[in-house]
Image (cartoon, rainbow, N blue to C red):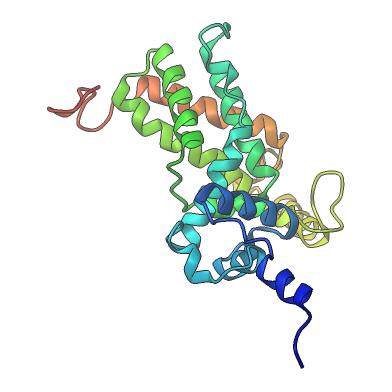
Length: 249
């Protein structure tokens, strides 16, 4: 039986699939993460979303780790870098903490990404903008360049690890403090253990047990950033603060 001419024409004239591009792939991956979580952002699942084969994606993204790093870089566009601007004014430490807090807040919104960020090595434009902003503030505060290069890593690690620590809170049934049932049970058990410590056998723990769990997360995070910043101001690198020969400070 001969097919109707209109049917043949409709098959031939079907719209072609959009050409694959790296920006398009990353944008789709970000949308997939927002809808289904980072664990679902795999090369196979992304290929399904783009109506192509996984092999086609490897031309643009080498592996899942690189894909997750690219997703992280895309989301870093939400970090507020304005405190690092030349006209921002105010104490440089306060402004530095504000940028770092904004970075941490972005990861708090995507706990799965925070876990990935502990080992991811982003190298995109937004990550480089963040690093430049942080280094400019450290330079404004008089932190020697080689110390700034090292403490930068520690500052980002603190923000990333803090967000990753709370990744388990991204589950249904959380209370106002962001804890679900299992997490509350763990905190309650720890608090009970600290209150039961004997002052005779563990005097320091008995004296400071409640302080171990005190303070809001935001206050402790800001304090931790300041500890690192002040430490960088007063702690030389082991080999000294002169940049290695042949390297620009």
